[in-house]
Image 1 (cartoon, helix red, strand yellow):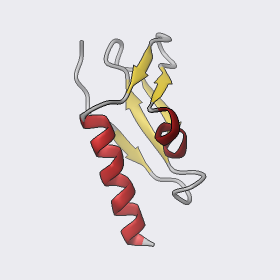
Image 2 (tube, one colour):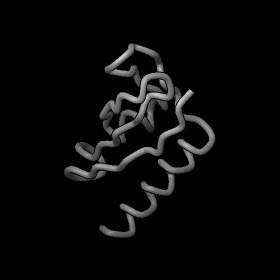
Image 3 (cartoon, one colour):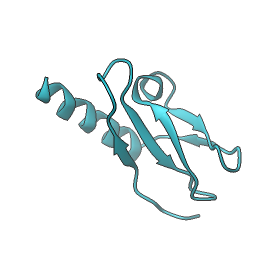
Length: 74
């Protein structure tokens, strides 16, 4: 299993257009997902291999920190 860091790509407002590129732990493919959707489901399907990626622990903590940072910018 490859360990890769999430990259953050902010495009638009927090509520509707901000995205994250999440690397797959199996194949390394980076799949973009709306942050608002990740907050609701905390999972996505890899666009490379089709594996379901579940954000937990560090991933959810990073998402919450990103949310706090964005809200401070507003």
